[in-house]
Amino acid sequence: MSALVIAEHDHGTLKGATLNTVTAALQCGGEVHVLIAGHNAGGAAQAAAAIKGVTKVLHADAASLAEQLAENVAAQVLTIAKEYSHLLFPATAHGKNVAPRVAAKLDVGQISDVIKVDAADTFERPIYAGNAIATVQSSDAIKVMTVRTTGFDAAAATGGSAAVQSLVAVADSGTSSFVGAEIAKNDRPELTAAKIIVSGGRGLASSEKFHEVLEPLADKLGAALGASRAAVDAGYAPNDWQVGQTGKIVAPQLYIACGISGAIQHLAGMKDSKVIVCINKDPEAPIFSVADYGLEADLFVAVPELVKALS
Amino acid sequence: MKILVPVKRVVDYNVKVRVKSDGSGVDIANVKMSMNPFDEIGVEEAVRLREKGAATEVIAVSCGVTQCQETLRTAMAIGADRAILVECSDELQPLAVAKLLAALVKKEQPGLIILGKQAIDDDCNQTGQMLAALLERPQATFASKVEVEGDAAKVTREIDGGLETVSVKLPAVITTDLRLNEPRYVTLPNIMKAKKKPLEVFKPADLGVDVTSKIKTLKVAEPPKRGAGIKVSDVATLVDKLKNVAKVI
Image (cartoon, rainbow over all chains, first blue to last red; front, side, top):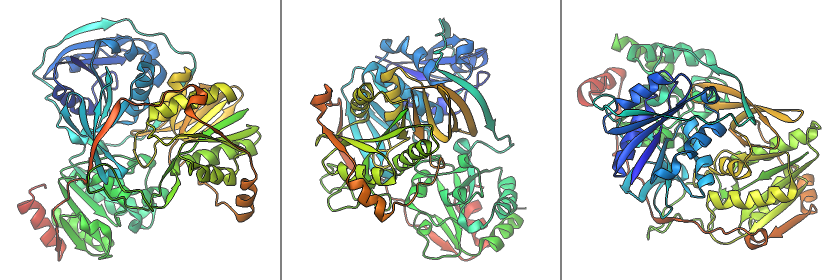
């Protein structure tokens, strides 16, 4: 029995979600190997070899894997999939894109968003926006799963010294091609990896106010910025800032919800945060029911005051 | 070009489900059921492509119990031309649905299949990708913009950190994200018209598909509850609590 973690990386470095996925893999029992499918990805392969608990790194390197297209990455995983009892992907946009392709080609089911490993064949996962937790058992020969990173601690990034073995890379599928990307550049921490998140809702009332009011607080705390669906729908914040059932799932040390009412879909994305603060002028807002500290106040007064108090 | 749009009947997104006391699942008896919101976005996108002349026919498909016919009627009220129900009272998991859809794709030969990225009941986010793999066709998941250009579709995808655009050769599978479009309201005349549109019914056996799954649900439980918090009177108290009690700043 051994597990393969399909790493998320930017070729040069590993993405943090890979480390949480390794922890889940270690809990499945048996050896843990990591696959780096990339282009000029020696840096990521070296980083994977240093993860504590990893015994082997498989490195496939080719232009066909440069853009991480699902068709090619899935094909690469399938070249070695049958040697493993467990295939684990982080439940990120990329992992969710590739994993089901692999499962279908192996003719096995997939277990999405695993938050707990009970046994090598038994896992827990949230359903209905986290309003219920299902315990599922798989009798498939190969367990294909995506791992919700907030459910597992990150494995130590150093302390391991796994061998790196090269794999023959797959050819391009020829059916899908990369056109371009618009990735927002900023100095803030990544939303899903941030220790503190400042999040805004419809209460911010405009895109200008959203940035004007929340950015100083995020700067002060070194926090990432998030948003509710209502704020994103209204155009106050970009799509990939959305926290919730169908957006990002986060569990920072501190989540500060400003002007967010707290729809169940939003709570699904942040209720595992260690400490939740809400600032809202509506005392009836459901967000108060999950907040450790609720401040009933006008956020346009309270947030600048908070920035000042932290100075 | 035909477009196939699979739609799932799910508990309405406004309903807060209750876990059954025996842990066997969630209680969906007498609960409002609706079309999965992401699938509704899929139907809207397909109908818009037909209205723009990029497609000739939109076929809605659902796999599940008899009542899925209502969901299919809704899809036809939005504008789908006809519908297919694969009727099955067993619980269907994503791989089984993908196999059923693959069999229908072989029959109907659509140029595009547009699905919701995930269903809001099981939150799996698998069926579209599985279907693409079974068909050995390309996929463009989490779409926020779709343009059909000749024998390819240019799709903007929502990814972590921003947007990505890919071009996929048709036939292809697309899954919708939230902001691809805003589905239109169905009007009464269109609901009446939808009642007269054709709806075919198959059984999984008619399509030669075995729908049994090797993943069993052992139990369903309530999530752990957060302990009740407190209300703080002002910003100074809040800062004090965060610094000295919670120790998170």
